[in-house]
Image (cartoon, rainbow, N blue to C red):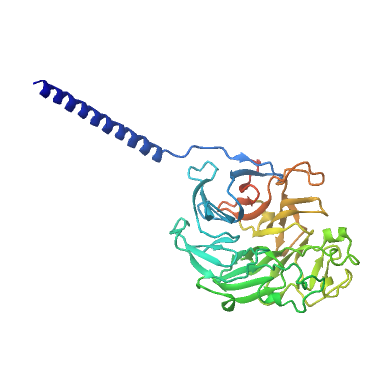
Length: 434
């Protein structure tokens, strides 16, 4: 009988343990379920200490993303961010403000290649590596339907590490435009100040190539050499109001290293201009044979090809439509089509400058060029300043942010990406400045 009582006690104890475990499991499931369904905690976006025109304000909506380059915003206000260096093995970050509090929460990351260009067009996300271009099918919310399915559109473009970004733009006729910068700064012969006759590098770098936006596995031979004579273009945009392509060229490097008889170090720090071009098929902007002097407002013959700082070139090459001080590094270009900003900004050009100008003692800024009837209608101006966080005429500390990419949101807001801290700024406008 004692054995029977002992067995009943053990059996009862076991049932209590099983019941307790079941209750604990149910409790954990309930907690996990509640946490899963619990909305993201609301946060207040940090105000950005930028200098902006009256009525504009800026907030920081994402931070610490990595080596951010260009970005694209979909019709939901979600952001696709391209990285120039992989983060956790991924090269594109997708951000979404799921609870509409003004702060973007990282939702996912994909793509196993670094790069610069990223665009949304006709139901696809287009993204570049440093040697080609991919695209991804989007769903009705303009989210990538399957991140594992990347269609390779263009491959085999020159990548020798220097000035190797492949920025992209798309027109309204199914064409894709890709920039290919030159790894050779001036097309000089090795160890010499003399230029290579004819600069044969122009066959594969220093220009813009046109490809089909829906044809897989294209190479140079499938594309059209749309424009040449552009040392390094990172900022590029298709202007639908003019139905033409616009680009920002990085100017060449120093003159006085090989030609001190013609250029002082000061002149070398202030030349050549960073230039904006409106391009059409077959255009030649003249690199490496000429450069643009924004003081003289003339195209000048490069010293590698017989120039001396005084010889001009009048006709042969395309004239820029706007010029900016040297070494500002224009890294993105956007034509504003929204309705949020005042009328003066409509169809004008925003430019992200990634560096500073010795001439201006300013830099790390977003500039604006007003347009009217498809042409610049006034001088360029500084739109957003103080990304650096220091007085560049008397710097007292490290640079805080460097503008890299620009995109327009569905509400007409302007998004600016920084590649120093991986920060994204959102610039809005209100008549009361809030």
